[in-house]
View 1 (cartoon, rainbow, N blue to C red):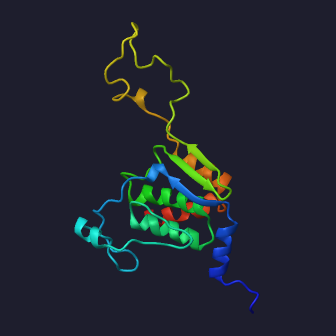
View 2: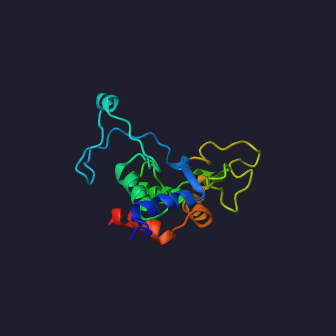
View 3: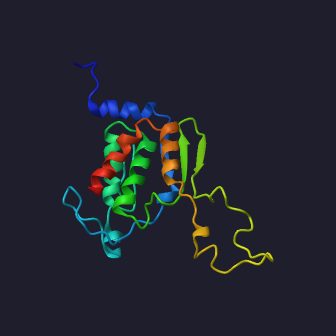
Length: 193
């Protein structure tokens, strides 16, 4: 039937309708590592040397693109977009996947930032960095005389912050995403299994 949308046209229309064109996660802005040489689901191996990288052709896309430091996390984002999710849905899904497949850089025990560019031209910035515990005080790293105690902020339980990543992802998803937390975290759970 000519009036019926195909999955491809529905996907493209959905992108036009979504207010979000781009979500950039500073929390996952680690440079792509050239150490990952495991083949992806297509059997192709990621570029693994500087020489190969110099000869690689750039990847382009017409409607959307997902980039991360680990190809399995990237594929999670692509799959979320193919399911009809928007850029924030994909970014959050990639963030959770990075925590599983690239734990040195993707994390749920830390914090980060997210910049979101809306279709109307506005830019939003979410700060979900770690925070000090509620009982923290301005002088907790000092002795009774007001001198900084070496190591107290870095080598003791007092220096631990409350992670903000999961809260930040949930906030972004609720305010600007189109999918549920259960939907976007499912691929990370599968990768962890």
